[in-house]
Image (tube, rainbow, N blue to C red; front, side, top):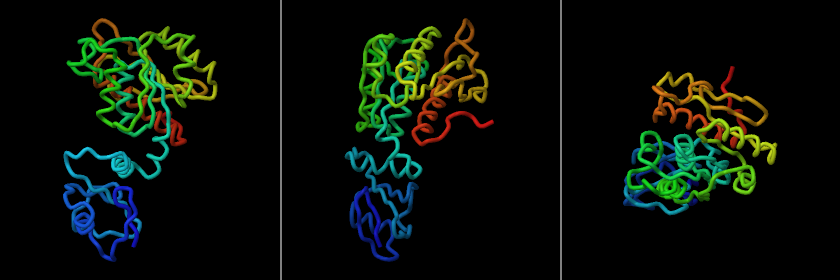
Length: 271
């Protein structure tokens, strides 16, 4: 029978176990994954099974990492996302978490843009580290993403986005994700990108401050090709700060909306 092991085709004997394949192909592997799920050495293999063998602490090569991502995803997901290019405008609490989620998902190319630097006050909710304080956010995040998934290409643009450069920066982005703080900047970005690329989707965020119920954060379609993630009302204000849990919920709504669009699904909540 035919199986794949770490993305390579192999012939296995009838009634062969995952352990015997491991011993024959990669004897030092600590983990065996069969069809996306951890398996024991005694697991019987079937024709067409996909096996991934992993040794703890070993940095996988490009093909092995691709195989691992494929194995852990629902079939068909990895093929759809690894060829995608996604733009992220602003890499603060929303944008940095969105970028991390999409890199872990295996999106092939991320374009990130922000003019800001990492400050101590960012660390309560943004995906940065103490030793990155003072660095431009886009460069710090690019380095972090490379540590998470070195096979995701990140284009880092350290600049202030404006109507004159948005088209150039995000010209290759299939989907644009908005992560700005200020309402007027959100409007400027959405209007500029929509005018330049009317057939491309934009995913924006609004209403994720404080520590209100996580279930009040939703994904809604608010206009043609425009989706909003958040509760739509809860803004940062004295006594209502931006905190990691709720900001993270909204950011992952945005990242999930990207994934659904790439897979041909509607991102918005069902009625």
